[in-house]
Length: 254
Image (tube, rainbow, N blue to C red; front, side):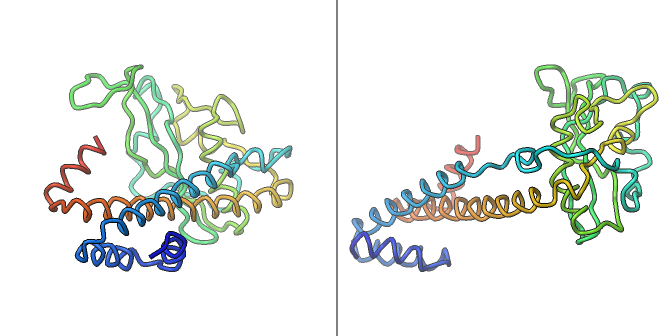
């Protein structure tokens, strides 16, 4: 099969198992050259996908441009604490847990009108037993439920989903958000004061950002699938057993 036909074949086939079956058949027929050509074509496509992804501007703030500050998170929609969060570390102050601060924020989209914001908390444990510490002596929790906001418009929910992780990452007073708890302000208190842009000011920019983000997600999926195809093809080419594949993948992850 000529190289141009291999490329067209790979473009045409969306099922990983189909390409792997083609590879297996080539190996059984002794056509290693075809397998190498398939690998070469996959590597070329992987490079193109990476280049296309690198060309995308995924900086949300570049898309939003200049805007007026609008409502804080606790002023928009119906804000509720997630169930079972009363004893969460996010509710503590530095009087209860010294050196407490926000790590990262993620937003779970439950519907067009409902979001749940989750935060990781960073703190210095009393002892390092069982804790993985960074260079500053902090440990970080898994994402913990912080706020659940309902009764939003779809645009408001879109804005929260995109903007809150960026604002938390910026911190330092950006959008009214500071990452450190105090003796009177918990991490939840800090989050509730985070101020969103006026929706009308950023509607067009947010729409453009969502389109670009969707393109990035599509490319990420293609990159992941192509990586998997290359790995599986190499495993077939060298006849690796399941145990050998597990050793290789553990070594790569390590």
